[in-house]
Amino acid sequence: MARGRLNSGAKAEAELPKAKINRQSIQNIRKLLTYIKPYRGKFMAGMLFLFISSLVGLAFPAILGALIDAAQGKYKYPYLPHSLNAIAIAGFIILFGQAFISFFRVVWFVQVAERSLADIRRDTYFKLITLPMNFFANRRVGELNSRISADLSQIQDTLTTTIAEIIRQLVIMVGSVILLAIVSIKLTLALLAILPFLVAFAVFFGKFIRKLSRQAQDKLAESNTIVEETLQGIANVKAFVNEAYEATRYDKILRNVVDIAVKGAKFRGIFASFIVFCLFGTFVGVIWYGSVLVSHKEIYVGDLTTFIMYSIFVGAAMGSFPDLYANLQKAVGASERVLEILAEKGEDIPMVESNNKIDQAIKGDLSFDNVVFAYPSRSELTILKGISFNAAAGQKVAIVGPSGSGKSTMASLILQFYHPQSGTILFDGRPADEFSITDIRNQVAIVPQDVLLFGGSILENIAYGRLNASKEDIIQAAKRANAHQFILSFPEGYETIVGERGVKLSGGQRQRIAIARALLKNPSILILDEATSSLDSESERLVQEALEELMKDRTSIIIAHRLSTIREADKIIVLEKGEIIESGSHQELIGNEQGLYRYLSQLQFETQVG
Image (cartoon, rainbow, N blue to C red; front, side, top):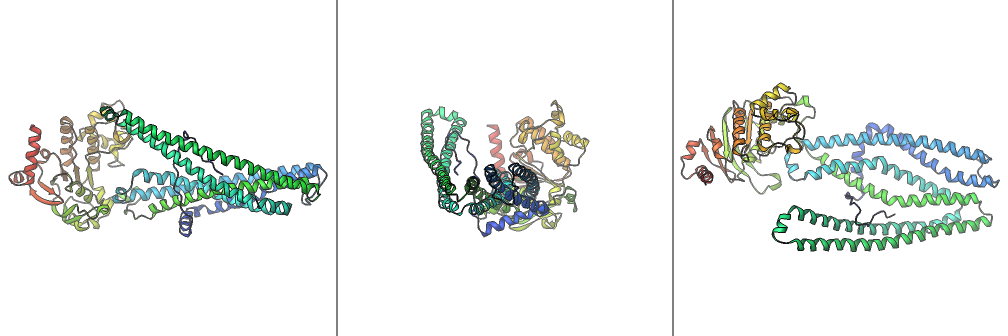
């Protein structure tokens, strides 16, 4: 039956997309059902108890009819005692047995569903965090989070409720139709001639009403978007005196919402009137025909009561199937999206912390040998075109160039976030693919321009560089990063909660936390990706001092925006449009009057003077 609301104030629910149920989708569900295998004993027991519980439930209309007939001194059923009180006691015993069975059925289904869903969630999350960066570049975080939350919740509902309910309603419907025919074949034929058409009409009309309801909610969502945009850009609205325009735009959408809601209400009223008339009309007709049969001594009054109860069972079962089928379609769609993630090829990273120890140490030599690279999502656009350079262990190598020249892409390649289409990246003279990804990433650290801190404490954020570090090691790293003093200025010190993404700290403070984290990691190769470009002068001085400490005795790749910070670099590489066009020390490059480095340096100097 239709349950969709057309009240424009009703909260819109995020509807999961449905999928067609076919051979392929059934195969997908079977893949997920393999997660039930470890718990199949309880699952099969739950199924058995579900079947028994459904069959036992079919006995109650017969007992009710037998009680009414027994009150008139008529005993039709030979398997029931010929005593009114005994029949009632038998009914209570059956009721207790059904309650006992139902308890275990519910508990076992929930146990199986929760444990198998926990396994699916774990595997999905493990797969997600080991997928390559290209996977995340093409998808929104909200979409991926929805797969772990909404999609898996839908699968959970299906395992715990929908499948069990479909089986139960099938048993009840088939059993009720058989028992209806046993009670009175004439009444059964009369009922089945009407009820299926009534249910089919209700399903069709219900879909139409739900469609109107979704239209109303979509329009309401549009109106909310207008409010959000207007309030976020209120300064522009006022500056251009467009209050009247925004008010008209909002009013127009609200009128559309009202029109759709009123139209839906009319159809809902027609639908409700039709259902009330037809449904109750059907039962009145059945009772009338049954009364005729009673008056002709063809059935007992108890039989008629039993028949009416079974008719209600059949009608309720038929009415529940559309919603159950829709939930099953949503679960099929959800399972397809979850299986897409599970089928992706992840990076070879062990999920046990103890297996992430360094097997092959890297001294610090780094080389790019004719590296050509384009992002997989934009394969037609080559970012790096034959890049070759060497950085000896302990050297400071700066990479400069205009925005979009490929500087940060080189950092991603060093960290093995991506792999070049041709050419080789070498560590200590050996190709990167001879090392495990964990060995490379355990010995390379990055301090980015936009530092992301996790929402925990300062202590936890620094410790992320080496999870087994002692508090003394963490404090020592903070001191070397010029962070200890400002950390102690907080009332909670190292236990200060930094807030989501570190919003409670300033840019300079976040940078120094990131430097402390990198110091704690003690990498062989360090990447500084424009680590001071967005800081004020005082913060830059403190961060620069910390960076000098961090760069001691390790290979440092400095991606720089401010050229003043890289004058002491052993080598400066100048990139333009993905190619190295200059290379040398600061003095060598500044002496090239036609060089890009000299031009950029003069440009920055003039800007600072101006």
